[in-house]
Image 1 (tube, one colour):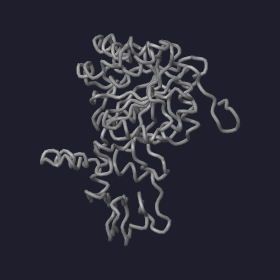
Image 2 (image 1 turned 45 degrees about the vertical axis):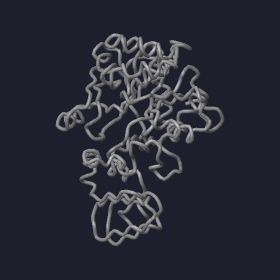
Image 3 (image 1 turned 180 degrees about the vertical axis):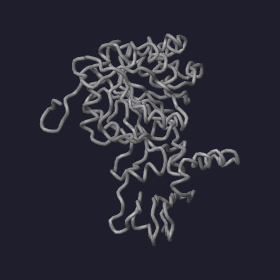
Image 4 (image 1 turned 60 degrees about the vertical axis):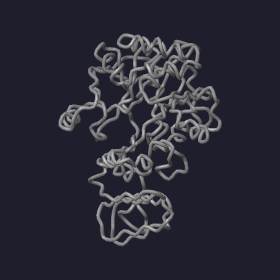
Length: 370
């Protein structure tokens, strides 16, 4: 990979980075909540939130061309965390409509400037290892996108939980600057556990929600199934003052369902097999795998203030954010998350079930905790 200096990567002149920053991250409750979702938190102990880390690894590729799309509820927090982001580079959704309207709005805004410009969409709440390898994969994806493809970055198993979409890759595509890119033969959204296990054996790649495509191409693909949405998004891009009035009319749908699946069926999707570690921090078991074990306490991982945690013979993860001492005694694979107004105690085996707690709290009228 060519660089400027020893460490600074060379920018990609026609790339604009789009960072959809949404979702409540309910499996990480009570750390992640509707008012303070996981992308606003430092979950890996680096001193930077997941959103800030996402910008850090992508901004060198597209200096001054980073757009963040977030909900009205989180706009102020995003501005606070990203003080150098120009005001016009923050696109605010009046209400959640899933990923397609969010990314589509960014595409419509970008299309007005340059329909051939390449849009790279990368979620705000993922953890990426080997940033240099990630940036090189993005470069390859951009090269393929310039040829008119919708390009994904595919993750090699072992997989995340089977709530992720998958793609079956096919023959290599001969494209300058994209040695690894391959044709996608099929794109399957959210297979069940049994089918996901079959896909692992069959060599499928996991979709990580990273898409690279020309703005005009994305809107053209979207228009094939959702022409009204494209018209509305272009109206909003032309006159942002209409956002509040027009936004509720948009269909709530993911980019996977709206564009990726039909585009794959039409032979329009390519994939760059990722050669970097990736994690979407989907639950506390996943988070534990990203944290270092305590050197003086093998088997225990701590997020927050280590001095507040007293452990006697337990393993697992403790998130100490409540300002009080947390003591664990003789429990294997424990998960303790202490915050000022809520305490979660469970085990790694039940981490996927934490979202049901959020549903229960909402059902009994405790929305103040969700």
